[in-house]
Image 1 (tube, rainbow, N blue to C red):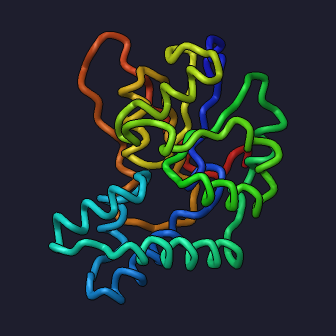
Image 2 (image 1 turned 90 degrees about the vertical axis):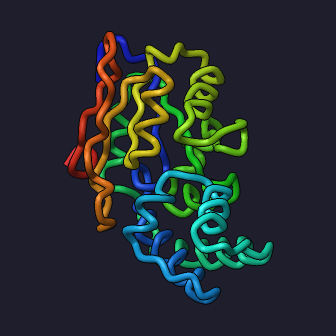
Length: 219
């Protein structure tokens, strides 16, 4: 972390909680019931780090299917039930938060209900709930910079003084677009093909850095 960092912005899924593989497997299973056959690599390419409206738009474009309104409700309920059984905090997160010398907040593509449920399950809601921002609060979710810029503004910190920790290419692109330093965390348990490729940035003056963290925090 740079000495000039004034705010740490954390993604939730795949950074604070080891949830991505649970979400991906559940989405594959639920879509299969509608006759839509996708695999984990497809989920990684199109959905990792994005909000539910992106899922609907992509399925419509690729398969000519409008997901029925009850699909979202059923998927979310099944996912939260799976979280209740299997969700775990990412190793080292609690200790990392204890050691931070700068303010921290969360910026996530998850719905408000999902992120609250998730963070409560792993014991982080009381600590981070008041500084958790979701894509529902902005016009465009990741990879647009809106969510990160919104989080920084709410926390009263300039974008250039923020450090973002993300796991998805979508999140990395959003942080870069926001003009923030960004580190990539790849310590989750998921095995989705292709998502750990480093993002390539166009050359420009003082581009935001992308640093990869390959193991759990403080391990």
